[in-house]
Image (tube, rainbow, N blue to C red; front, top):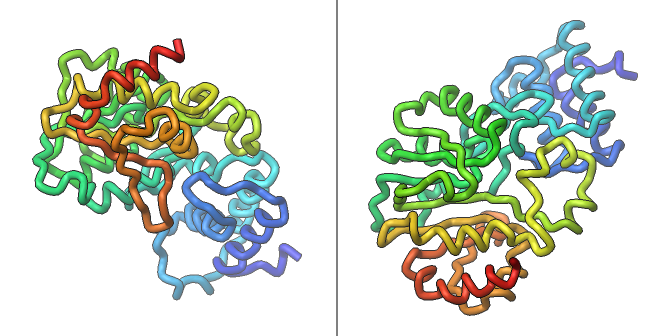
Length: 306
């Protein structure tokens, strides 16, 4: 009986049970029902996400119970990601505003940011960085927050995504070092050169997109789909990046499951696939010099798609 629920722990456990029983899909910031339920309950109660377990036995008021149960039921019935229900998501240790204007922040690149991009940037001086296909702005803003000396540009083709990114720039108080620019990949960045370009572009294949669970239908398709093999954007980025990278610059790009297609298409391209705490997750790092050496092969692969 719901009337028997009383404490914070009770409602987190209940939420996780409802989510699990409804066979919801997890993958938007969290990968399991318990973490999603924890986020939802603590947010609704206006409590910090890292609340001490000592408060788990605290009892909810009748008004609080109603508010928590309402969001739990919405998560089940609407299949909407919890970040969109609460309006917030955590990325690289920072809180961001999150809604349907952009994908929910969830890239494994967060771990790379928190690790200082080591070993890729060891010994490299970064003055300017670019977050290409920025969406909510989480990657670029996190880079600026963790590296106070960097100036960072956020670029995206979507006006809606850029409006959210600008809100997050102000939310994180990095207006003096971060700017948002409308650009179709590099088209709006003429003359701009960076020491580091980081991108989480669309990389979902048409077949994968058609099979995605209902949760993903709430996200803008523009930020997900990338052709038959998921490489429509990654190849263009590889082709054009050298013109916007400094001599010792690096490109870091996420392609997810399209990693296999990219390796098959350009087997000699020396891509460094980054290992994360949970293993390899389809993110590569490559120096500008190596991209230039294989420019002809990249252009040839791109030309065959047109």
